[in-house]
Each structure stands twice: as structure tokens, then as C-alpha cells.
Length: 258
Ligand SMILES: Nc1ncnc2c1ncn2[C@@H]1O[C@H](COP(=O)(O)OP(=O)(O)OP(=O)(O)O)[C@@H](O)[C@H]1O
Ligand SMILES: [Mg+2]
Image 1: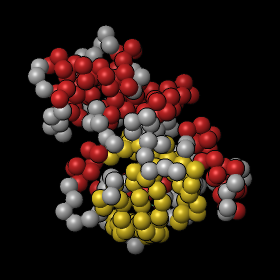
Image 2 (image 1 turned 120 degrees about the vertical axis):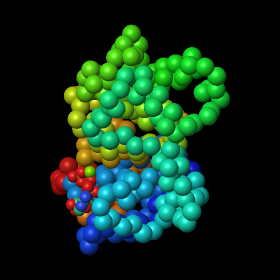
Image 3 (image 1 turned 90 degrees about the vertical axis):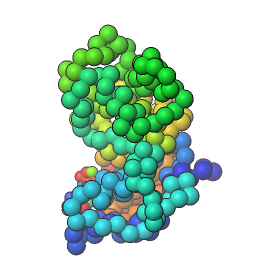
């Protein structure tokens, strides 16, 4: 058995009049990797963006239902959206480093969120330690430790994605949402990101959108399988890949559709 970190309950989402999610109910277990899989256009990105209230940033979107984060509904009254997004971070498909140095990219999240954790207190040396810690957690430290104050734009795409991972982690999210995080990367860089995600789940709950079945097989502990905005099946990866209940799930994981 697992402890749910997030419970999604009857979640519906619309873009204008078009309904993209049709009442999704599923769990995201704590300190596991949950993969959201399904054919293109089935609602994976939409569902992911509902988990930190990012969907409402797009025009004419509407959401109903509940997303319980550790027992608190992030769609409930009086919720602080900034706090939700601090607790639930996001890694986008394409790296978008901020136009500043490598060091400042990682320090940025700490500064903007005004986080006053014990490590932050005192002088700049502590911030140095924090930046080093998260660059190490993202598997980038060795490659950049001698050029921390160079512009981030000088890094390769794969390095930029790991920098974005370090920046997301520096805010210390409980949950990290990743939307096709390796789609813009070469195979070696993609493998680097996969290894970091596996190492991170010790302390972080990860939700991964991927259209790569092999990636889902390598990384996922838990699966949410969507089809045209509906939840077809959800459960432990082992069960979904080897003894799925629904014919559509069996066909999809066999690679016959999608
Ligand atoms: N900004 C938008 N405006 C209108 N419709 C949208 C918008 N974004 C997504 N949709 C529609 O919502 C549905 C779900 O889209 P979503 O991007 O969540 O799918 P996805 O599973 O992530 O697909 P992909 O694998 O191609 O990334 C699709 O029918 C899509 O056309
Ligand atoms: Mg998508």
C-alpha cells in the first residue's frame, strides 16, 4: 500500500466550450514516480497543469472538482496559489533558463519565494552552499562549478534542462511535475534527467507526463492512463503493464495504439 500525496477527485477541465478532462479520479502516491500516459491530445498536459493550478493561467479555461494536496483542496476557498506552486513545482518540456548567470538561475527561486530556511540565514556563503547542493541534485555541478557566473544561455540544451531542474528543486517542492522533460534532449542528456528523477523520488513525489512507453516502464511506480479526456485505468505500474483490466490499456501498453 502507498500513502497518497495528491488525491484527484472528479476533476473536469474545459478550454472554452471544449472539455479536455471528463471527471478524473486518481491518486498520486507519496515519494513515487507517477506517470500520466495516453495518446496525444488525451489530456495529459491539462491534468498535470491542474495539479498546481497552472491551467487557469491560459485563456478561457475552467476547472471543477478537487485536488487534495496532503488533505487540503487546492481548489478550495481561500487557497494561496503562490504557496501551492511553491509546494508543487514544474519542469517544462523545453528548458527556459532565465537571462542571468548559472548561479543566479538556481538562487532565483530562493530569492523570489523569500524562503527563510535555516540554511539561508546569514551570509552569501550559505547561498553558495545551497546553489551547489541543488546543482549536485540535478547532476550538473561537476560540469559548471568553474563557470557559475557565466550566462546560463551558454550551456547545452541538456545542461540547460538540468539547470531548470536545479532551479525547480531549489524551492524545495514536495511534488515535482514534469511534462515530457526529455522531449527536447539527446539520448545521453535524456538518460541524465531520468537518472536524476529516479534519485529524487527518495524525498520528492514526482508526476511525469510522457508519451514514451519505454520511459514509463523504466521510471514509473504508478500509472494514470488517460483516453480522450477520461481516466481508463490507474494503479501500480506492474499491474498496468502486466495485468491491465481494460482492453484499451492492454492495447496501448502493447504499443498497438496511440
Ligand atoms: N490552449 C488550448 N486551447 C484549446 N484547446 C486546448 C488547449 N490546450 C489543449 N487543448 C485541447 O485539450 C485536449 C487535451 O490537450 P493536452 O495538451 O492536455 O493533451 P496531451 O495529452 O498533453 O497531448 P500531447 O501528448 O500531444 O502533448 C486536446 O483536445 C487539445 O486540443
Ligand atoms: Mg502534452
